Length: 293
Image (cartoon, rainbow, N blue to C red; front, side):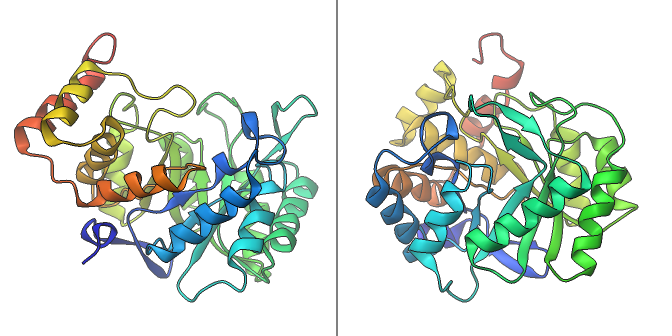
């Protein structure tokens, strides 16, 4: 069994996927805006990911904008059987690379059609509704109106499954009363664990939880504890951070992103990394330690 297979699988809608996937965000240019610095390198990373067994890729047409979806289509279309493409709607990019809300009915419908066209699909496997009440993190407020638009698109056959992104537990509960929710995508890693209770609640309901910024995002995780544990295991700190997430809960699906084939291979190796109980306990304490351990 390959490293990626050792991490196990979990349901994503009506599909079962390996728990370690790939996030395409970093394939765009600086600040996730404009074309990649190395276009051929970006295509090579996508092809390598699929060749090594990754069966779900996270993307969005507002990455670039349009950049990552077009790269995915060029690299992988016609798509191999079993590959699940997960995209997001609900935001747009300003001319200054800012992240802006795009949650009106017309904007949401247009975004779905943009994703379909740029990915070369007739229906999207999973669409996450990105909530932009506060672009910097989850904030309370009803999400019924934009979710109803996405549910209509699902009934029209353009969207197979619905997920949520940047949401609170209350919004997840509201959404589940309106539509079947197959995944929740929020910021979460071993140092930032505000969603601990939500992860467990979703696990009990059989719903996938997909951490974005699993390695800290634009400010990579820095922790003396993490560095020490990694050194003892002969692994990189980032591999240990991914292994901790896989150990945290069986419903966690990972989508670490990179524009480097070498880093991709390092990330995939994390699926085969076993954390001894003592090391796992040390890592568990990072979130409660000033300065992240």
